[in-house]
Amino acid sequence: MASMIRAQWALILMLTAPAAVAQDYPTKPIRMIAPFTAGSGSDILARLIGPKLRDAWGQQVVVDNRGGAGGTIGAAIVATSTPDGHTLMLTSSGFAGSASIYPKLPYDSIKDFAPVTQVISNPLVVVVAPALGAKSLKELIAMARQKQGQLIYGSTGIGSGTHYGAELLRLSAKFDAVHVPYKGVTEALTDTIAGRVNFYLPPVLAVVPLVRDGRVVALAITGKERAPLLPDVPTPAEAGLPNFEYEGWYGMLAPGKVPRPVIEKISREMARILEQGEIRERIIGIGGTPKWTSPEAFGRMIRTEIETRAKVFRASGAKVE
Image: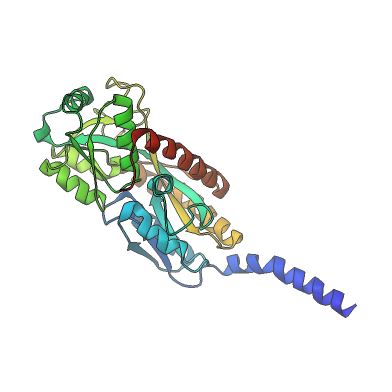
């Protein structure tokens, strides 16, 4: 009888312990990894959301920029962090791209991460330096076809969303170009402005001020609809390339073995934050669309995108040297 009672208590403790952990969470400051450089979409969103999590839970949220290698450096830090929910990552769709193109990563993109939620969806923008002379997407494509393999395009790293978007553009428009990966969006944009890079596909939220100031020329939005912040920039279909379309995203991940109740608590809080009028307006104001998804739905999306991007990278011939 005594052994049966002990077994029953052990089962009760096993079932209630995760809930108790979630109730107490967080117990110390949260480290929010942004796996790209300062000024990137990940960085902007982490610094927008961090204060809201701090206000909700009374713990500081420290944004830690760990850019490089298409976001894989920051991702590796998260994958090996203590799985207690106090290390999170605000990453881009490049997370799926890295998993689809790097033959060996220091982590398993599925097993070593726990999806929390998608945060926003956002299109990219095809931009060129004014000195290039291309005034439309048709002109850029004509130039690239005429100078096959000579134009240079930048990205925020091999496998990143900006790399994937450019490869989709190349395949759709049937031209070759030289890929130059950068550590982050700021570095890629700097060389685009200077003319060292001929074209680049950054997120809307990273490039609007530069377009308005005339430092880069925006040729097309990669989504189905025009971006409210760049209403004069056509979609690919409007610009004469109807078979090209791409919508990027940013989302939140945690280490893979974080207790499920903790993941659900973070996800619920993110849903509440993304519904706040102030947050919605600020996200829309930087070119994104707030989008909460359940951890399960976000996980399914990541797995699907890894497969889709692998097919595109194989078709385009893109690979890690």
